[in-house]
Length: 429
Image (cartoon, rainbow, N blue to C red):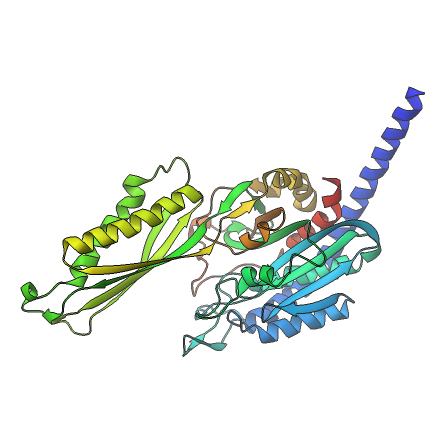
């Protein structure tokens, strides 16, 4: 009786592998076929960018697309869109996420589809540009929705498409982004079993997919330090308590938190002062000064230690200069943590989707991503994929969040392949 059992097991395994390969082939063919539409969708969104929590036209564009596909839709988090596609077979609930918002940046290139859009930020009219590639993310998820909707009867489980606004941060005084999506229940009804996200990178060659298990992108905290002294004529500094000189000493001391007080073999740390505001004239020592910046960490104990040291240094230096100081630190985004077991398991799926030669492990990233909030509710994996034209030098790639940012949309179909193969393969991992 043992031989038939062995043969049966081999037969079932062979059947499963053949079926899995058939679906991979179908997905990859359909993704390649939708590539022209991906370019069309991406360029339309690129020409019509909208700032965080103001993605009204983008929301309607996505809703119309999903409804044409017969996907159930709902809205949340002000301008977010959620689509639900119930497959023809029982299985898990898999969420796929794309962010939608653009940035207050003036695009500096001669692309025929460059943005000339305007928006309002902090009460001022500003140029608006997709300077971080969110337009490509939306197009890829729209493409995944199209491919998966055409294969609905074969999908093992349910797919939840999350089009998220305000990843770059909601305007002051507003809620937004992934945190608000989670707060309003995006990971429930139906409850999500796993969630995946992609981010295009200008320095990674197009077609390639990068992954990292465990902590991937940093926690992002913001801090503001207000120094109060005593105003005086610039010609009589001895009558002042100079907040500028005091702040300069504080800022210089803060740099030693990273260089001399943190074990960087444990995890990377970044502390950056990004703005200083003080004074109105060259010959007046002002009464007050305010500066602010960001802290990036991967370890919660190190994060807490830096918060404590920052406050202690600011207060001690201010006291030594007879000034007073207030320190405010806000936790904005947790560490983007890729579930270790799930990340390892999906590597073969990624290799099937885009080719083994195009899948690569990467390092820590000190940028932050609010995709991390989804990972607090379900196993999550966040991936990077390439947007740099082949043959270009990564060192010369234009950085994200700059006027010169540019990515290729020639292989957006690879992102669709990744998303769709993960949906079909997750239950077998």
